[in-house]
Image (tube, rainbow, N blue to C red; front, side):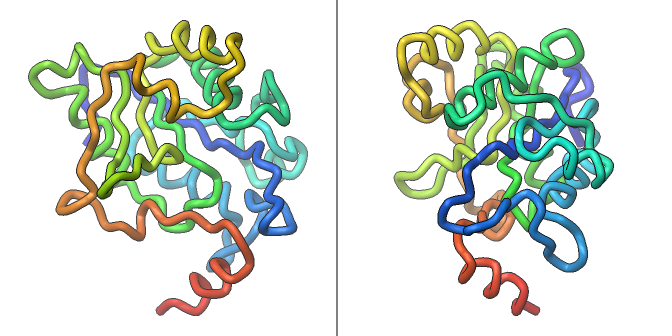
Length: 202
């Protein structure tokens, strides 16, 4: 369940080049549904509204039934896409859950866990919640308060393109993957072998 005191929106980040995959990851089908649609549906099931896709092949994504906004900074990496999502949603929501389009097992329970710290004591002092396992932040699966937008915009203007390198300027809640989250919920698909493994999983 999402924190009732916050308006939570969702963003499916679809603008990556998919170089290692060799084809548009957002449109790859797993179990009969395109990856971007799977992520979108998980956000909707969690209660996020509105849910929008950012960047990518807008015509193809709209054909999947997604609401699409054009990336303000096409080809400039995930920070630009995140800024686009926050800027488009700041009047509709307090928090934006931004997920990569290549998460075949995105799960409403993981999305709820991401948002829960904002609703806890001291949550009004948080800027971003990011899953963390060992020494890695899972930046493709994070919840951002819209107040982070000016900080992200300033970093982008200064030449930064990676959200993880902006974390030092923000109040971050590192959500421990274990025992709260199933690691499969955070697993992304980067190359054809990953797709084959996921399709063969029972």
